[in-house]
Length: 269
Image 1 (cartoon, rainbow, N blue to C red):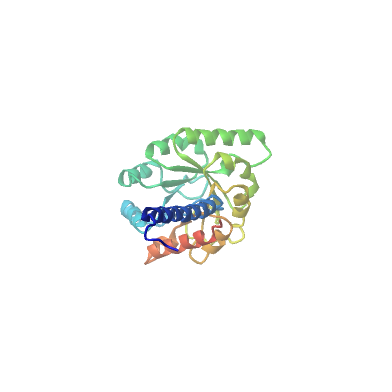
Image 2 (cartoon, one colour; image 1 turned 90 degrees about the horizontal axis):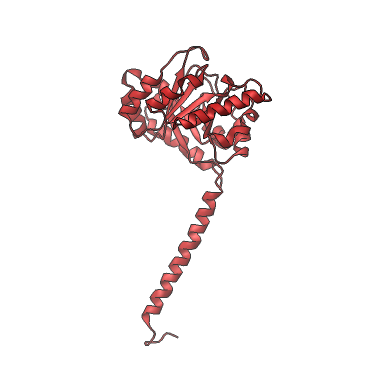
């Protein structure tokens, strides 16, 4: 029974303790859930290859205002792929106009070692080169050593490290290096040109990589759109590159939101 002589401060203290207890269990539930998450946070990276190059800075700023997390910069040398695009000077200009943007530079070049310092000085955030430039035999120890040397050189320059694999390159080739890099880019088209059709039979490689690491970023690049995003999300991808699907839309903000929603919905805890 309540008593008029009961110290009301005791009631307040009990309510405070009950509230703290509730907050603790809420924190424990959400904290445990986040710790067990199967992939890093989703990042949407519009490919500026699909932008209007005459208004590149303006277009890039528009993408960020629409919710883009990164900007994907396709660099092609005309040798590794049969196309020629942009280089470090354009990245430098973008950095000047977008000081806080995350510039994800995808180097489709024959000699990635040659360009590391140029892109670091230009302000690239992530240097994403192709495994195939260094390795054509995953049992070759010399090639593995060369790849690790290249990874360390990129790190030493201050950039994050990504490695891309073409559609025909087995996912198993990259698995031994996952603990040394920040991202794997799984190409779902042949590199060299934008606007290609999504290869649905290739995206399954992401599952092999995700089962080997919950921490590494897995990027899917090529033909990704609202119609194909669920297939990417289901196998553990968390960084989504889309060019024409975003830049070609009248409502790019909605496309970006749709892509992100699918990835986050598929992330398990």
